[in-house]
Structure formats: structure tokens, C-alpha cells
Amino acid sequence: MRFKRVIATFVSAALLLGFAGCDAFGIRKAMGVMNDRLINYNKALNELDYEAVRNLSDWTEADPDYAAVEKLFDTSDYGDAAGEGYIACTEYIASTIKINFNVTGATIKYDQAALEVTYEMVDWQQVYSEPHDSYDEVLEDLKNCPDKMAIVSDVTFENVDGENDWRLCVLSDLGEVMSFVHSLPDVTG
Image (tube, one colour):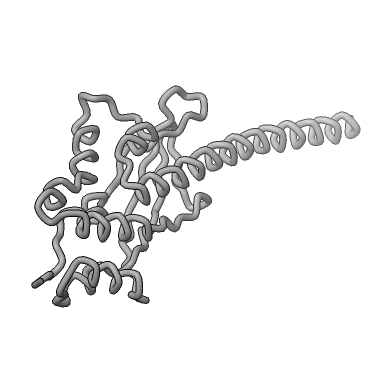
């Protein structure tokens, strides 16, 4: 009788550890997909590629975020009037965006996951607040600016098909991150 209890205990422990291992593997796999999505999302921000952001998301054309993200990346508001110098400054700022995150800190509930991220970029607000004679001077100051600004935010993912296809769902504070696109530096010349 005692022998059967010992065997039953070992079998129960093995089953429990087996299930825990499967769950941990599933979570690791989900974290890997989210990590890849965030890396590609960062690249899309660096290149001002709103279509790539859309492709990483679960948005449809009917979703307000689908159209809103294009407006956030649209440099034509000032680019048409200010010219290539403004666009070069905007592209440079975008190229400095770095998303810092730790996928092990994600909160996963069913088919949704929330992750705290920090967007870090050149402190363009400091540079833009100083008077400049030209956009070339602004760009030079941006490139030489040692200061960074950081925006702490959340990214929410949704597993769209239940098969580990985690997509960007909610990009909190993206308007604040991309506000440099719709800002002009103080250029007097």
C-alpha cells in the first residue's frame, strides 16, 4: 500500500511539472513573438513607416487607430511649406527612437498582454526651443545633442487567432512620442 502511494505521488508530481513546463514553454513562445513585434515596431518608427505599424497591428480599416497612425507619421503638414530641411530633421529624430522593454514583465490574460515600454529619443524639444538660422543648423544641433528624452508608456498585444499570433492592439501615448512630426523648430533665417 505504501509503495502505491509513493508511485502515485511521483506520477502526480511528474504530471504537475509536465503541465507547468508546457505552460512555461507557451509563455516563452508568446514572449518571443511579442519581442519580435516590438523590434519590428521600433524599426517602423525609425523609418516613419506607418504601413509597417499597421501590418504589425490587429487593426482593420474600420478601426480609428488605422487612420490615426498615418496622420501621426504624416510630415506634409509642415514639410510642404518648410521643405527638405524640416523633413531631414524629422527623419533624424525618428531614427533615434529606441524602445526599451522587458518582455518578462508582460502581463498576460487570456488573449491579451500588456507591456510597459520606454521610448527614448534625442531631446528634440530642447533643440527646437533654441533659435536657429536654418534647418541645417537645427539638424546639426540634433545630431550633437547628448541629451535624451524618455516617454514611459504601455503597449497592448492581442493574440488574434489563438495560435500565438500576437499583434499590436493599443499603442498608448504614440501621439506624444510622434509629436515631433507636427512641431516646428525656431528657425529665424
